[in-house]
Length: 481
Image 1 (spheres, one colour):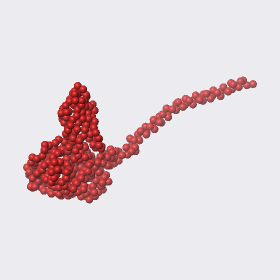
Image 2 (cartoon, helix red, strand yellow; image 1 turned 90 degrees about the vertical axis):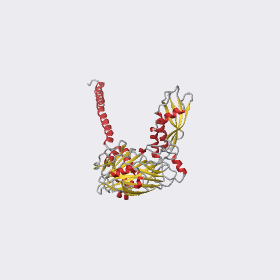
Image 3 (cartoon, rainbow, N blue to C red; image 1 turned 45 degrees about the vertical axis):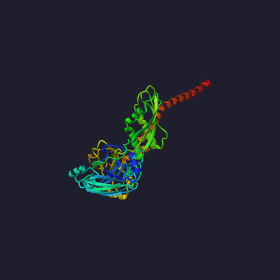
Image 4 (cartoon, rainbow, N blue to C red; image 1 turned 135 degrees about the horizontal axis):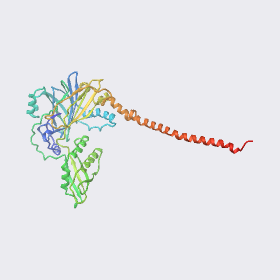
């Protein structure tokens, strides 16, 4: 959702060294980043945008924040809007925490368990100022973004404007930067989201050491030497496909943003090269570290190693480092008294949530003054839809024109009434929960009816015995007379 320009002027050599140590060369399509003068290219790792449309005022409101890696003292972000935007920083607002406050109660009610809370998005002293200018008149932006791209879109017309967000952060030895949240408001005939991002200007060649990959096999120790392949042959297998290992690390970074980690994995290999077992060696650490180690061990168990005459084993140290240009992930969240649908999201767009918000949950996520500023009406039903956009090619990304629809009637899927019915079912008050008790009663009644013939037979036999004893009494007394 954002295009970035970066001017980085470290005041300490240690910061430049720390950033150089986590560098990853990546395609320029991974994120629209413009660089003026810097030692490492900063790129968007994760961003979140809330969209609220005020249909009465024909005005759209956006809340935006981003996580960038590696950190830089000054960052410029460019957001395209349908018209000139009013820009207001929101210091102290954590948009990912707000999204969690909205989603967690719904998942707890509908699924019976809440999701894990995200790591805090703390700006840590960063400040933000913003300006908005019609596209094609942004001479300052041309120093940060591709002037030809900006000019071409400005000539096409359509009233697009560029909101420039200047972020300044204290100089620290940190590997990522979280921008303060910002509120943008602009006139719009219909709810929309401009996803196009200007390509970054060509940066100068950085005077830094060769880039490091985010996954590095640092050492391999095979045994026994006479049966196992060489260390390089084993390391080659571990380095051949890293997508599954990076997926493990990305889940780790969601809980530990910007943190490097080294783990040791031990494996037993059969003669045919198939892993018989893999496990994490050494201390497991907390739950997040243990999950990373287990995930990596499972991924390695699916590898095919060289064939040998006998079984063998190895241990390997695998180091994970935050990448220079991490995978892009954008949370697109719509809120309002109507249901906004993204009809044809890109292939990498995934619908994550689609439900009605309770007034209490909305109040927990946003303060009253912010709700009023965004035009969220009091006393109205509010619907939330959440997409996860992983598209990395944003320079030509299609804009989103949201389709408006009425909120479903209470009791339909996603509404508060439907969720409440699910809660009652799990609590044992619904018809499905009552069915086992009804069946049990029916089985008991059927069993009682099957017992009646047996009881009747015993009763008839008992009466026959008693009658026979009574009749034989006269025989024992002998003839009368």
